[in-house]
Length: 289
Image (tube, one colour):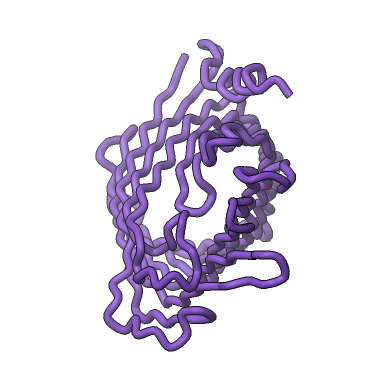
């Protein structure tokens, strides 16, 4: 596979010429310690939390027509690592379909680039209810040290009510890697509900989120395995503000209300552990003639 050619295909849509009618750029920065570190080894006595991670998401979206968009982005995620994505987004009536290639970049030394695919499907029902699903998968096998694959599955059920949007969601992210000491799996599963509250004419929005997070790191050596796991009830609050017709910003904070150890961490006192994730974001929109 000729990765340079594929990377050109990923980035080319970001430079669609003046025929594009509208564009949007968004960036979000997050810092937190909700997830295990990438090199954690179960049963090694590492503390909780064991690392502070920095996450980044930067996206550029070009609207080619009323029903066709092209999105290009870069994400750095505590579980999935570094990923470049390019997506074609098509809207037709109540249906929205998104699909495109992904590339994991510099997540391990022996495998600097890993190709994959991502897709999403959203359906509007009765004008107020919507249901959607998203999948992302690295197309790779696990044979030699440094080989890895990552994946994401998510589903959402939402409803639009006066001055609010309410969602129930499930999400699973995983990263599997072959190391000299065995195969290491990291994962995060989230089950939550959120409410996005707003009012016409008011430039502020508030998103309240309550979710259960289950994080695991698993080391497989032959037929044996060791697992460290944490379960947490996490409360999140995000405040958004429309700074101008073309610029919006937000700031958010997720904190654990209650955390308990599981598997290898069962019985570990984590009652005083403070887990958090804070984010800041900016979105800029513009029209082209």
